[in-house]
Image (cartoon, rainbow, N blue to C red):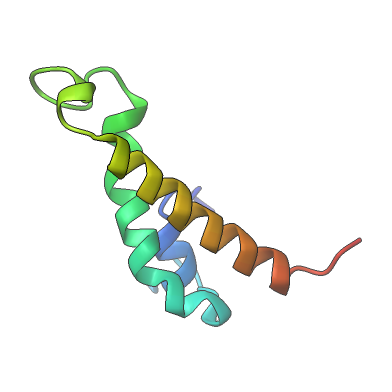
Length: 83
């Protein structure tokens, strides 16, 4: 099985990727899409074809991403069994 790095695909699922999805997290699909949009460009120095990342992302972008990720983490913690 191929690794999936898309939070959106992990939540929604994909027949093509053979991922069943997580229905309990479906309400967070929009947040997952937003996080997926920043995954590659912010991870690699050449993720933006010109300029520097600081010119493309603001403090608000970062704060939004932290909030969205927090919501997803909290939801996952609620559905995972504690061992």
